Length: 488
Image (tube, rainbow, N blue to C red; front, side, top):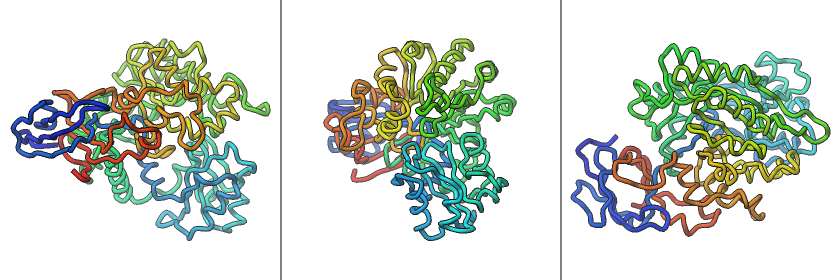
């Protein structure tokens, strides 16, 4: 990071929301002093009263999918299957070297029509087209795209959950060097929003991939490298342990948790729920049976690897909590979007983190009101989790939501992202709590801390949800190194 002997002084920085003006000295990549009078330094930067905060982490990212989504056709405005088709086919052929045209971001939970492969064929005969849902749990293929991944003749072309993941994995990826460059560029864009670290849940050999990237590209964030469950035994054989630095990671990489799934998602109607979906549909999809889940968690924990369990529906969350209690280990429950009343207090166990994504609450409020009718008071229930003693960390689930922590912070505090009133405002959380949850628990800038810092133009304490979402970032420091600098 920075030279061990360098002394960078940030003058006239406001310490946190509504905090006092102070001078912050950085030496060797750490906060050395927070002073009322400026100490000696080698370099001085005047923050001009801007606010200094701990650097922000995105605690749930899919790095490669986010990097690719930034270059795909945007389908978020589609209000029907027909509109999604029109958005893709109205664009020039953007297939590039892969041969596929890919759109991303549709939400079909409220669509009046049903996607089908024949719609894509009629609009663009013979063209390999793949449309990926916003939650990454559904992919809609044209006939040519189905044939290219060995699924010609599929009756609908709409693949969900495991079928979706397997088919997407069969698509030819961009050249590795190009994809690594895209991922590196995405880290720089994240740093421009105050991000200093991400927990990467890409379904890949993340440790190996990130070692390669930090050796070849400028990487502007720290990375927790998760382990897909199908690589758990390999990770054990490599001696990987959650929280330890990755050899060859240049001080930027640490081993993350092992990721496993209990259920699917709300928008795909595969989140595993106590009550059935409207119209007599099923209760969702149980991806991993309780006994199998416990076996994976016990094996991982026995070798120093924390589990991270994807659980969205209330039955899935209960199953995940049962497994944590039985295994007696630390770890994470990812999403926890719907929680049974009797399960809130079970989150208050040592070492358990609820990894939540507040931007999903306003994004999914209409779908939740339809499919979880009568239960939304305990959906995306961050205040309820905190009141019960849970530890939460904020993420985006990028590309499901943009890799921008201010979007999540604003959604956690305001519970809306448009002109409508807040959705279940009783589940809003205070701004200081949201900022700490977006910074791996760091609630202030103190001597001895890593100099992973963000400088915001405005004091967050004076902003509403829209103002927080549009917060200008003047500078981001990673271990004392500028990863973003503007106007200071």
